[in-house]
Amino acid sequence: MAGVWTFLQHREVSAHRAFATASAAYRQVMASGEEPRLADAAQALTEFLKDYPRSADAAQAWYSLANVEYRRGRHDAALAAFGKAAGRDSGSVGALSRLGIGYAWEAKKDPARALAAYEAALKGRGPKDFLYAELLLAAARVQEEMKQPAAAVETYRRLLKDVPDSSRAEEARTRLAILGASAA
View 1 (cartoon, rainbow, N blue to C red):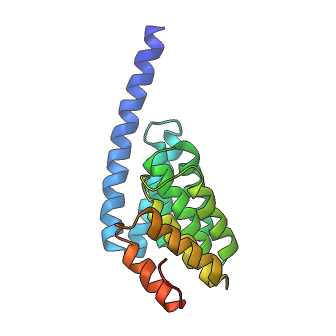
View 2 (cartoon, helix red, strand yellow):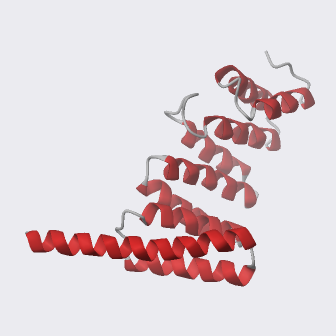
View 3 (tube, rainbow, N blue to C red):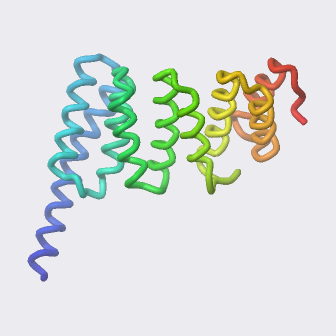
């Protein structure tokens, strides 16, 4: 049994080193945005995930890959990768991935699916949760796009009621004014 444990520990250490290399490349390429380098980063992350699919770093790798694919305009690949990341993590990476799913659906010009993604991400979340205000703002934006102004007004007001000091509150007030609604 000790031999198996040692092997698994060694494998995880190797995975962590490999991810550190892929992650460094990811950060550099996201800063530059150069298409050939984006493809290289996607390849490096894909290879990491193929070699270490059960690594503790896998959720972060899927999320990073999703961001690269989104940046490349490969929205189906981004959706798949965001989905994998969300399925592997219930914390910050999972929350960011669920938000990313909505963004990818918006990029694909499918606001109904984007709204469904944002609403699913909001389930069980409250004002003290990470990304709560961002998710509400995204949902309201899509409601506006779907010609549902009453729903958008309700969502913007919910944001202002639940998180009045949010960095997104001013944007919600502006959108309400554009929609001809008051903040209350």
